[in-house]
Image 1 (cartoon, rainbow, N blue to C red):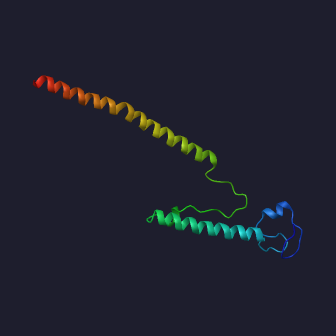
Image 2 (cartoon, rainbow, N blue to C red; image 1 turned 120 degrees about the vertical axis):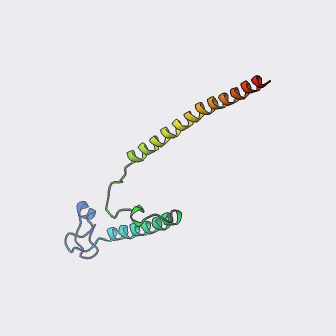
Length: 119
């Protein structure tokens, strides 16, 4: 591919950099990617602020402008969070499924004992 400003032939390594190594102008695909990232950030900011009006500006997630930047947090982090949430939910379900019937049996048993003793 050639630089659209100076016409220099660019290697694949040159294409990953934001600027042409010869004329130092920003490459078009990097400029478009930055525009898209800015638009996505604006939409995310609007949506998140509408849903959570009191959120401070520094906590709204932003999409980076880097070419080929790694996703952080990565898929493993998302997966670990989901597994952790599922384990917590399962623990609560287990507690409720075991403790609530025991408490109900104690209450019913206490009422029955009270009824038979007061007769």
